[in-house]
Image (cartoon, rainbow, N blue to C red; front, side, top):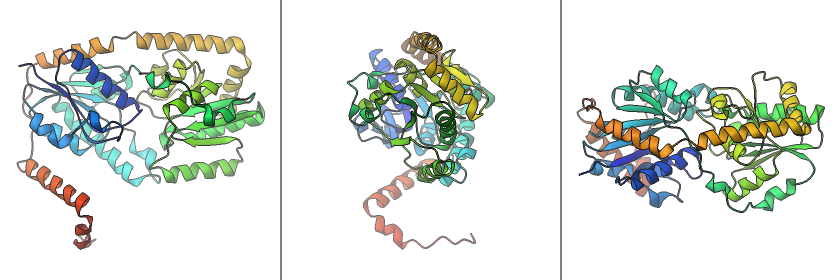
Length: 400
């Protein structure tokens, strides 16, 4: 009987890079004849019918199976997968260093710290550690993973292929210059640096310009408020924070953008850069972490964070037609190189090599691990069906 190759991850999001990759992997595996399910703790309601609850994973487990574990933060699904006898390959999507979230999201500081600590435990558990970029692969190697490789992110642009929805974006489709950023409004993206550079561009180069910030701030309301305060303090005008948008609306914003500006200080890959390449928008980006490798010779990279210097790059792309065409040609070439990679072939080769390796020794698991799992499941059921029961619990003794 052929072994199954299942995937496990904390959450399957709609429209994000990890979600696209997970679904792409499943398509390749099923086309190759493998039984392949996606086990998750949570999923976007639009994708729930494509997933299986992680608590059903032990029932699907077999020592000959292979689990592809997508690691982006520690989770209960992660720990259950660790304890099973199945072979395992880990795909690392990077964990943002916790210091970015200090004074902004205390819980995420803890989760990122614990996630990075938990990641190191898998070095002795998995047969293969895969980074979705060379930057992430090097991090796995530094943590002691004995076998590492790169399974590249090959972006799926189908979400941008439909007819654009200009109901909102049409208000900005005029003779003004539109500077665009797409991504979550979170601290490592350095939204304040994007605003600072745009403010310099508008003040010193082109008053008929605006900044369009597209992306959710859910869970980061404190940082969102800090960004609004920053805008008011420096007197930046024509900054539009547009929140989460549909795929059709996103396509429209790319259509009207003149330049894509990214100031992020930490990226494991950064798919929106490739979206901008695909949509023919020239990119200016901070040369940090995985960004230079992702851009692969396309766009304009900057090291000097001086807002006037960045504003000068924006102006050069807007006002110099030959430079703009040269940058777009290099972006097209970089995107062609990425899309030419045989993602499916590489994935299946990694699967075959992993299944052919000598089996690693069973992972050390606490004697009462499965009792704790069952108790956690029972408490979760009580919490969801009878939340008032938890009100009877005594307050935690601060002295303990």
